[in-house]
Image (cartoon, rainbow over all chains, first blue to last red):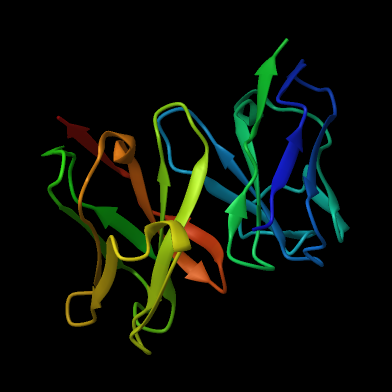
Length: 106
Length: 117
C-alpha cells in the first residue's frame, strides 16, 4: 500500500497570499497524483490530475508540480473561496488518499 | 457534464446491510467507471472500489473484499454499492464518483450511513 503524507496539517494564510501544500509518497507514483478540494458539507472536487493538469473549469491560480515521490499544489493568490481541505490521491497502485491539509483564514 | 445523484441517508443496525444508489444523467454512463469513496465523520477519504459498466468488471479494496458489492444497471444509468455485516466503524458519508482510470472526476452529493447497535 502506498502511503501519502501531506504537510502541513493546517496552513493559516490571508487572502491574496500564496499557498504551498505538499504531498509525499512512500514510494514512487510516477506522475499519477491528483489533488482535490473539499469544503464543509460538500463532496470533494477534482482540481489537478496526473501531477500538473488542471481539471475542467479550475482557475489558473491552482497549479500542481512534482513527480516520483514529492508533489506540490500551489495556489498563487488566495481567494476567500479557496479556504478548504485539500487531499492528494495516487493512482499508481490501488488508489489512496493523503490525510488532508486544512487551509484556514489567518 | 455528468451529474450523479445519490439516494438518501440511511440508519442501519449492526450486522445488517445497506445499499446506496447513484444515478447518472447528462453523460455516457456505460463507458466510464463509477467508483465509491467513503469518509468517516471528521476523517479523510477512503477508496472502496468501483465498476466499469460497459465491461461489467468490478474491483475492490482488499479491506472491503467479501463485504462490498458494486453493481450497475445500464438501463437506468444507476450504480449501486451494497455493504454487508455493518459495524459502527462503517458510519460514514459514502460518495460515488465518475472514475476515469482511478481519477474521480465528478462526484455525487454523498449519502450518510449511520450504523447503530
